Amino acid sequence: MSSRRIAIFDTTLRDGEQSPGIALQPDEKVEIANQLELLGVDVIEAGFAVSSPGDFEGVRAVARTARSATVATLCRTRREDIEAGAEALADAQRSRIHIFLATSPVHMEKKLQLEPAEVVEHADWAVRYAGERVDEVEFSCEDATRSDPDFVAEVCRTAIRAGATIVNLPDTVGFALPMEYAGFLNEVRRLCPELAGVTLSAHCHDDLGLAVANSLAAIDAGVRQIECTVNGIGERAGNASLEEIVMAIRVRGNALGAETGIDPSQIGAASRLVERLTGYDVPRNKAIVGANAFAHEAGIHQDGLLKDLSTYQIMDPEELGVSMTLPLGKHSGRHAFARACAEAGVELERDELTAAFRRFKELADTGRPVALRELFVAKVAT
Ligand SMILES: [Zn+2]
Image (cartoon, rainbow, N blue to C red):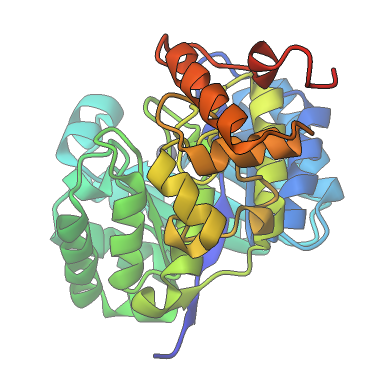
């Protein structure tokens, strides 16, 4: 099957930063942007320039340093947003204004207090105004998945005619199910054939834990850009996680018929940097980058892994810049225990090993971590 190249649009510095309590300084945004370039992301959404003077500086600093990635900033359909965005992006190698406007009935009526016809007019005006000021314009139908597909198609057609070359149909509130999202995207593509001539994008949130699944369903439905964040940080339950999407495509690329330009060896470093600068700890059991993602405690698993890594691992952690661990605990087996003893320089006769393993299991049953030196105070060099 031929492989489609999926563009990775990283929004760690915009949607990710919207997580409560995160406020990245411009130099911190630059540090993360540099790491995102090492990863090889195609687009860095650096912030929401008009939202604060600090964010304006952050977007400008990233625009000045990014060498290969396109730098984007978010804008409402307002003159001041677009002017601030264009000014912040002035020094970028390649600049993108990302305009968003809600298309769902609840957002149009309650939040925007606009009639549908006014939404179409605003979209048209804003895309044209932005297009005169930056290299390219992306348009997002906010809350697309709770919108009428016929109306979304009309807004998409308007945005494309006004010059948008990337159109995003986000699941803003994390409401969609994977098959439903794919069906929605296909329906809008059918109603708006002009979408075939632009880059269609997906942007998913994790309110039901489906952000990555929905993003993969979107790839299956033909999108060519995925919006995501490192460690999955973002509004509420977060965004689709970059590392999970990239590795799903890497491990299951044949099934998906897709590939990305991401260098997996930079994933571990990116995760640790974002964790440190945002203060958002990665859960231990988080896929790909959690401390336990490649930790194996169960005896049967440890035994299998010591014989062949492919028994219980579908990815090579070394390739991701993280390491596999075989922690010793109540579920560990004699094989891994003997290996840990040997690695610690403890040489045991067969009977000694049997006795030590029995003692180890008794201690491990208490549920706390067991250090080898507790078992062999005299034998382990400290
Ligand atoms: Zn979002």
